[in-house]
Length: 123
Image (tube, rainbow, N blue to C red; front, side):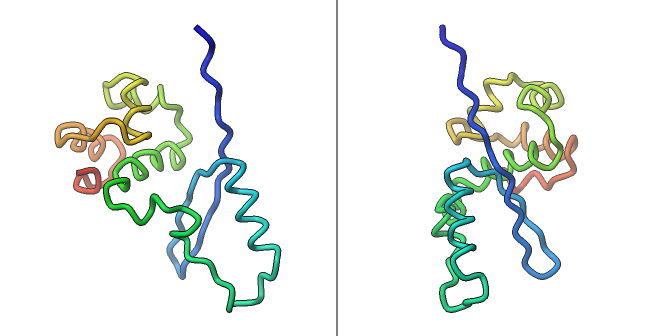
């Protein structure tokens, strides 16, 4: 069986007032964002809605998976590390992050206990 290819992600930090959000994006998307910002960073007439660059952010059904993936970005853990802390397999973490597996209430409560994030964000 061939080894799984690792996709390299770039961390993008977006600030809005005092709030800061961190996104992990593919290199391709990071370069597209960089190109958009380099064209004319002072021209506010050409602002781009974050939903155009990250369409999944506008889909409420994707938010639990995005939030779950954000745990790894914030903590610096691997999928295996998150899995060990939650008592699930690395494969389950991968499925949750990709949106192929939902997060039930019991797992959401474990996430809340382990990472101090309100469990309702995952339901």
